[in-house]
Structures are given as structure tokens and as C-alpha cells.
Length: 613
Image (cartoon, rainbow, N blue to C red):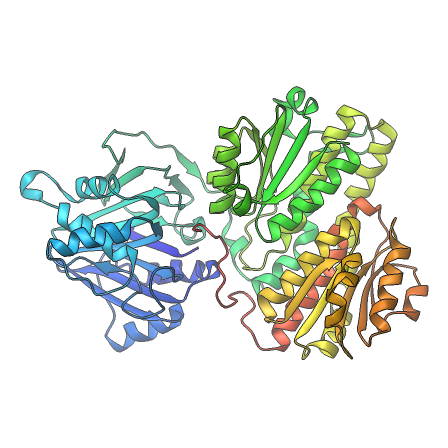
């Protein structure tokens, strides 16, 4: 969600901090701020809007100097989008300054207590309450230095946090801590960079420590110390970052979303590499091998996710039931966690998340584990919170995804769920011949994706015809019902067009009333078991004046009689088709946003990783 970058070392750091903050802009935010230590005093500059607004304000004020500082991009939760509510926040007594990702749930109670002690608040945020609480507890004369005050304060709060704190009375010290909100420390030569994402670190060092929940780290140019909030020493593990600098740069593309759409063939080849062999019909998933015997005995699977990840999970439900003959159900993680879910014996829960930090999905996974479920993950980010919480899982291996609107992570999730379904199917009842045939087709998906991507200009021209219409329908059946949901979500997210995705058969049960003259209706009408049914649904839309855009199978000439526009995809088995049928929908959404003049990579009100409720 919000972005954190902080530095302690021996060189001027304003430009370093701002560079890191720009690399985190994709996470979504509405204000930005920076604080630096100058001659023993903390100076703060913050503003609503983009990081470029912050740069302009710094230029107007002459900039900041110093070798210790921190900056932040905020996505508003408590309090509106104002300069006063932007981070960093300071206390009113001891020169404490803080940046914070997450939510302090008991902030109102703490605020009342602090006001009774005479503290005066200047913002509406929960973060300022934490700054005041640390300041209240800070007492170096009594042995409570900044590290100890942070530890004590965090023992009093309820909620999620990734924080960095500095203090005028300790001008060479940064203290950072996390619970439920990702935070890592890049380790350099006599310097440390704290960030909420490795993208802000990788241009300076490839070595990093990932903080665990309830851990606190004290950093100075001379070294660091890691402990828990109860001051129990911890020995962290310094790891190699999994990303490369070129992976988080545009590389000639206009937007990250565009780049990631076109990276999908390469991303899937990386995801497939070494994981299956079509010639012998064998799927080898290293993350599942140790529990393969338990997996074969499963009686039920629940898949959980939010947004795009949920749509991939829904396709996973079809795959597991169709191929592995395993009863499965996809659910909103946000609903699962607050129900009283029934977890039967021999049930596995699969958490699907690009970031591995989605708060609702993580909490739902933990709830399922408490009730005895086997916890599995389909995650992109190695070492993320959900990945660490699972018993086993499979990484996507599609590389960093910067665009807020997920594209290559979605096809990566579907690809991994397909491999998991075949992994189980082969061990349960699928013959080697059938499995070999499907794996051969799966291996060819990247090549077939490239054929679709070659039609980018054609898809743009079709989109241009309808881009001024404010209401669209996306319809599909079977495996491509979730694909229709994903197509509608994509166009909503970045072009701000109102779109409804639904099963094509559901249209007659109410939504058909929405159709008027010229309304775009995107049908996923590839050849499959329900093709004739979809054709009937298309004619129902046409009879009411709707304009049909059909995503159809190459060679289907008949559909041209019923659709104003046809976008073809190569012929593949129906169970593999969502990885292809979604690509034209992604491209349509991208071009719609560009044609309407929107910021594709930073859509309004959205964050890449939702780490709070």
C-alpha cells in the first residue's frame, strides 16, 4: 500500500530518498512527505499529490541536507487528503518523527489518554497518535532511549504497522518495526536503506533483511541491532534480493502495465521452466513434493483471494474439479475470515496473492490454519507474509509487477493453478496420455499469447470505437466466466468505465434491462462446451441494440454474423483458454485508459497491495 523509504549512512540522502519513493509510486498514494536530520534538527516537508509535487516544494524551500532521513507516500485511511494528514508526523515534546504504513485500531482510546496528558494533536491520523505515544514514553535520562520507547509503544497498540522513527536527541539513529505491513532493510557499506518494497533498495544494494512481525531494528552508520518488541534479541538472516533493476524500469514501453502485458509470454516460460515434461506427462512442483502424499488424500479445497487474485482462484476451482476431480470452492478472503467457516478433515486452503501481503487473504489463511486446514500458497513475492505462513506452495516466478492493474500475475496465477491441478490429477486418476497432451498444449501457451499480442493495433482500433461509452458488459460461461469478471475489473480500474462482469446466462435474470442502443457487450465466445449457449446470449443482446465485441476462436467465421467486432485467439483446450482470452481484454482496458487520458499505472484511489482492511 503506502510507500516507506528511509536512510542512515554517511552521504547526503535527499535524492536517494526521492528516487526510492518514485520507485514505489505504483503502490498507490495521495500525498507525500520527507523528513531529514539537519544539524540536530528534524525538518519536514510534505504535500498532497504526487512525488513531483514534493520535489517542487523542496526546490522552492531550498531542499534538505543531511545523511539521515525518511520519506513516505500516504494512501488515506484515517483523515482526509490534506497536508496536515500527510506523513511524516511529529510529536509535540521530544522531537520524535515517524512514518507509518498500516492502521492503529485502538488509536482513539490512546488519543484520549494522550490528550488528558496535555498532548495537542494537529492531524486526524492514527499515525500521529503513535508519534505522541512514543514521545510520551521516551525518557533517555531513565534509560528509555528511542529503541526502548518504540518497543514500549508497540506493546500498547493494536493493529498493523510498518514504521520508521527518528529523534532529534539521537541524530544518527533510525528505528524501524513491523507487524502485518512489509518492511525490509537494505544492507550496504556503512549505510542502511529501510523500505516497504525491494524496488526502492535494489539500485543501491542487493542484500537485505526482511523484518518479521513484532520485530524492531535499531540502525546507525556503525551497525544494527534486531530485537522483538519485548526486547528479546533476534539474529536476522541477510538475503539476496530476488529482483533485478531492469525488471522495475520501463525499458522503452510507455507504461508498466503495457510492459507487463507484453511480458506475459516470457513470464509464463519462466513459470513453466523445469516444472513439467510433456513427454512423460509428469508435473514436478518442488514446493509441493514433500506433501504430495497428503495432497492426494485431500477431500476438499478452498481457494481464497481478493480482486484479480480471486478471479484466478475461481478459474482454479474449475481446474481442480474438472481435471483433478476434487471438490473445490473459491471465496472472497474478506468474507471467509469473518464467517464461521466449516473446515472438514482433509481440507486444503490455497491463498492466491501477487504480493503475498494482502491483509484479508493473510488473515483468512491464518483462520483456516487455526481450524486445521492445510495451508498452501500461490504467491509471486518470495519471502512475503503469506508465503511464510503457508505449509507449502508454488511461486509464480513471473517477476515484479509494478502496474497497479494486475496482468502478468493473473496469467501466472492461472498457469500455476493449472500445474497444481495437473499435479494432483495425474496422482489421482488422470492417465499419462491425457496429461501429456494437456502439458504439450500448456507449453505452447506463451507462443499463442504472442500471436494475440501481435494484434495490439487491431484491438486498439476496436476499443477506440466504444471508448466514450460509460457502461459495458463482460459476459462468459464456464472457465471464462471468471475471465469476464477480470475483463470488467480491468476496464473499471484504469479507464473508470462502469463495467459489469457476469455469467452470460445470468444476464436474462435482470441485467438485460441495462442494455440500450450501442451498449458495448464483450462476450468471451471461444469454442467450448457452452459455445452454442453463448451464441444464444449474443443474439439476445443484439436484439436489444447492444453492440457485441466477441473474443472468439481462430477460424470461427460464423460468429462474424452476430458480432460487430471479433477479436480472435488461438484454439486451445477449454481449460487452458482463460490464459489467452484475457489478453485482448487486458489490451482493451489499457488502450481505453490511454485514449481517455488517464494515468494507467497510478489509477485513482487504488493501491497495488492492500495491506489494511
